[in-house]
Length: 181
Image (cartoon, rainbow, N blue to C red):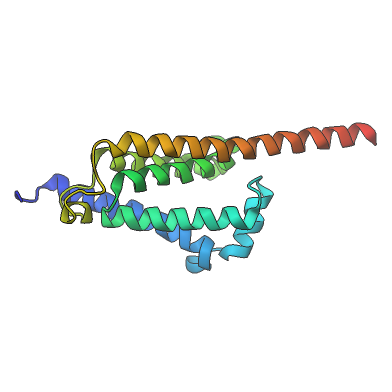
């Protein structure tokens, strides 16, 4: 193994920071840690923004954020972890998109930043200070990057698309109810 350089240290810091934030957000949903809502309240929120069934979506979201965050922090299965985190953040960004870009207005800036960082880590790789390196890159092969992003794109399009369809149907139903009054 060659000498560790500043790129490896930079990737380690980026992985620890991004992974830590993702994992913390996931545990907020799952367990109510760090001032989070916990699974029941997160499920009610998910239901209110069109992700149904809410509790199942909160569970999947929480597990995805916790799992991908942990894997990114460890630098393990980096292509899959990064791509899956992008999918989770795309789902979050879809909720915030009607509020514009900036976070102070409730916009999608924050999930977009986390998603872009996770995508960058998936593409760049974890660096030499990682579990992937210790495992001989068995879960970090070049071919895994496009496959992970392709699978994530299909799943994310289905989930976010279903949510969008439900929201459109709800809006149409509300308009029809107004005309009937």
